[in-house]
Image (cartoon, rainbow, N blue to C red):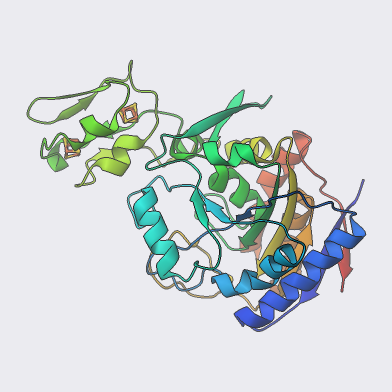
Length: 340
Ligand code: SF4
Ligand code: SF4
């Protein structure tokens, strides 16, 4: 069955204008898809790594917040901590970066606690996982508006809603499971035996003599020590075997039993993602904003439109995630594009 994807062209990256476009699409979706909004509907966003200049600024979302507020529905911004050491590794750093990037209009909840210790397990029947590890705070809500910047990623390829679900809902342990599924280790030449990682490890998996050692039998792969180490001595595998499929399985788990409304902004298109803490080149023309209740269909519509306009094979990368998600029963690869 074809899913509906709503689309409004917009070729200028102008946040107030994008806010109006998103509002129009959101209202159209509510009407056409007969969506009943619940008492509180959080906005899943990406606050942008410090130094990145092409992430979606909060002014792009004002129109969606206006609609919710006019209907008396509570909302908040949500995201979970990143796996690597950066400006969003712990809750305090994450909140600071979000505020510096202007996310001040509504409350913010970092879903997986200070450094990824607050988690929930969601059972799935995947090829690689029988459960996924997500941020605990997402558990209390049944409906989300997932606001995604459609752009590239060095391993995942191009995507929007699917990556917001897979990486954005995963706790730090869930992110590590997708990237490698194995335990971290200590780079001895970088370890100064400061013992900070001992405080972060709730599983007594670390011992320290001249340097720290991680016991693979005791380590549960929570990734907390990566967040705590001040020298970057705790390393993990980014090789990403079957990463694309694992990403799809996490996306599936994140939206399972939830009502999701997806809005993808196909503007400021970069080859790498908003987690990169430096300015990135824009590699394609701005196209517009898409909305749907189907994460597979909306990302497929964005990929198809991008490839049709740009004609580059580069934008092929990202389709395998959608195929695996479709196989899991998550969404449709066929869609009806409705321009408004
Ligand atoms: S926190 Fe990092 S530098 Fe300090 S002991 Fe642990 S691994 Fe070594
Ligand atoms: S050693 Fe393992 S269990 Fe302990 S904090 Fe690091 S990843 Fe978590």
